[in-house]
Amino acid sequence: MNAKAEPPGDWPRYHFSPEEAERLQAAGMAEEARRFTLDDVFEMMRLGALDPDARVELIDGELVEMAAQNSPHMYAKHALLRRLMRELGDAVIVHVEGTLRLTKRSAPSPDIFIHRSDRRVEDVRGPDVLLLIEVADSSLPRDLRAKAALYARHGIADYWVVDAMARRIFVHRQPTPEGYAEVVEVTPGGEIAPLAFPDFVFRADEIPAAP
Image (tube, rainbow, N blue to C red; front, top):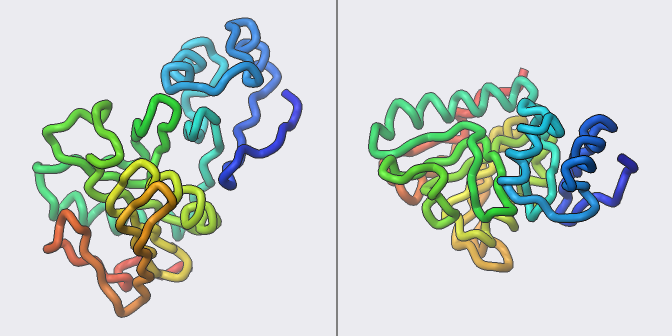
């Protein structure tokens, strides 16, 4: 498939291989002809037009590539995940790179998102998310701009961007259609607690130092 302009919002478009593009064309799902839904993505996988292991997200009908994860990213994510799983208990479900169905045409896969355990994940929408975390290294500009705009637009009340390299947390709150009205940077020595879990205090110093 020929290279095309990047979708708006700093999203790096996923480029289908020639074989994948041929299968899409045969199924009447040519990329140029439509904006995809999540059901389309599942159908692509069934047809072999998209590798089920491809690191992609569906954003505003576009398939976009997820950033690769290096060691600082993984260590920071695991540090957060261990504490969240250990301390929050059975009242919530903690997803790691799970599919969050904001709309039928926007289904990102955040590093971590949390919702009440009495909700099925397929029924969870932005306002149901109690905490969403993206762990960033090379993806920091996208997480602070394009991802923040997306999550604010869909009403996610508590969005953290964890900078794995500088060991700081950008806490986004008060979502509006134009973006988050409140953004606070928590640096080493500082701490923050999620809106939904005020007793869960996380210190920026807990982010493992990059090697």
